Amino acid sequence: MAVYNPKSLKAEEFINHEEILATLEYAEAHKNDKELIKTILEKARPKKGEMGYECRGLTHREASVLLACDDPEVIEEIYKIAEEIKLAFYGNRIVIFAPLYLSNYCVNGCVYCPYHVKNKTIPRKKLTQEEVKNEVIALQDMGHKRLAIEAGEDPVNNPIEYILDCIKTIYSIKHKNGEIRRVNVNIAATTVENYRKLKDAGIGTYILFQETYHKESYEQLHPTGPKHDYNYHTEAMDRAMEGGIDDVGLGVLFGLELYKYEFAGLLMHAEHLEAVHGVGPHTISVPRLKRADDIDPDQFDNGIDDETFAKITACIRLAVPYTGMIISTRETEEVRSKLLRLGISQVSGGSRTSVGGYAGYSNDERPHDTEQFDVSDQRSLDEVVHWLIKNGHIPSFCTACYREGRTGDRFMSLCKSGQILNCCHPNALMTLSEYLEDYASEDTKKSGYEMIKEELEKIPNPKVKGIAEDNIDAIRNANGRDFRF
Image (cartoon, rainbow, N blue to C red; front, side, top):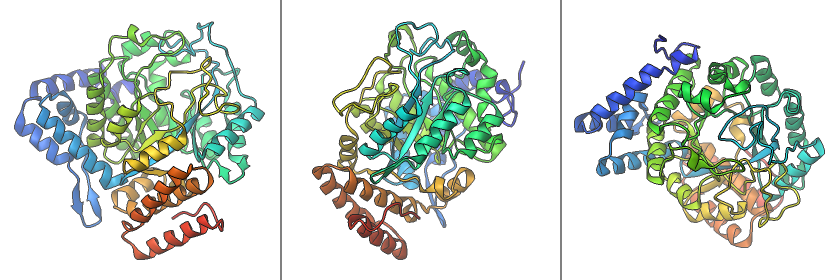
C-alpha cells in the first residue's frame, strides 16, 4: 500500500487514496466542531504585515473541514474571508483571456468529452497555419491579448511540432493595434523534452486538468488511449517543472467524481508542488461538466449545484490564497458574477469552443458542430468588459509579469509582498485603456475611463501613479502602446 508523502514524485504517494479517505472521515467527524472551525477560519484570514498582507493558507484537511460544514453562519464567514483574500492579493482586477481550439483530433476514449475517438458524429478538424492566423486576427479584433490554446491528443495529427508551429504563428501576427502577448497551453501530458520545447517557444502557463483524482474512476473514465495512464498524467506537472515551466495550472472537472474527494486531491496536488518545487500552482480552474455533442451530463451522478460550487470555489481561495483562479464561459453570467466575489481572478470572454470558431463569425453567430462543450455565457467580449466595469472589477489584459520574467516563485513573491497595487494594478489600467481606445463600444469606453480615473487614485506610490497617468495619456493620444511596470 502506498504511503502518503507530499514530497514524493509518485502519483499514488502525493495524491494518496487512503489519505483522502482519512481526510474526508476527519472532516465529517469535525464539521460541527465550532472551536476547530473558528481556529481554521482565523488561520485563513489575511493579516496585515510590514510588507503588505500575509496569508498562511490551509492544509487539505483544514479546508475539507470547512467544505463539510453546513452551518450558514460559517459559510457566510468563508465567503467573507475569500473576498478579503482576493482583494488583498489580486485587488479588484480580473484578467481576461480566450480559448483557441486548434484541433479536435484525439486518440483517447474519454467518456465525458465529445472529442473521444469513438465519436463518429462530430466533424474532425485541424487548423492550418493560415487558419490559425485568421483566428488570431479575429481574436485581436475583439481585443484579446491572452490566449489558451487547446488541442486533442493525437501524435499523428497534433504532434508537438504542430503545437510549436501554431505558437510561433500566433506570436508573429500584429494586426492593426492587436497582438497576442501571452499564449497559455492546454494540451495532453507529455515528456520533459517536449515541455522544454514549449518553454523555449515562450508559453505562459501550462494547464492540464486532472479531470478526477480518484484513480479507479479515472481509469474507467479514460478506458483507452495514452490518457488512460493515471500516473503519467498525474505526474505531468513535475515533468513540466523539470522542463523549465514554472507556471502550471491545475483543475478538476467537477461532476465526474464526488466533489469532496476531488477537492482534497486538488489541494494535495497544490501542496505537493509547493513541497517539491517551492511554488504552488499559478492557476486553479474550476470547470463543471457540461452538455456537448454525444455527451449528456445527466449520465454522471456526481453533479453539484450552484451553492456547492460557490462553496468549493471559496474554500479553494482560503486554502491556496496566492493562486490565480479561473472560471470559463461554461458557467452562466449569474454564476460567474457570484464567484468573482469569492476568489476568481481570471475569466474568459467572447469564447468559442469550436475549432475555427472565431474567423468569419459575428458576435451573434457561433458554430456548434465541433464544440467541446456548450457555452453558457455567450456575451461578446465588449459586453463582458462592460459588465465587469459596472460591477466594480477592472478588466485586465495585462501580460507584464510573464514578459518581465516574473513567473513561478518570482510572481508569488510579488503577490505576497503586497506590491500588486504598485505593479499589477497600473498595468491593468493601462491595458484597459488600450482596449477602450481600440475596441470598446462608446458606453464601455465612457464607463471604463470613469473607472480608470477612480482606480488611479488607489496606487500608493506617487511616482508609479504619475507614470501610469502619463502612459494612459499617451495611449489615448496614440503616442504609444504596451507600457508596463
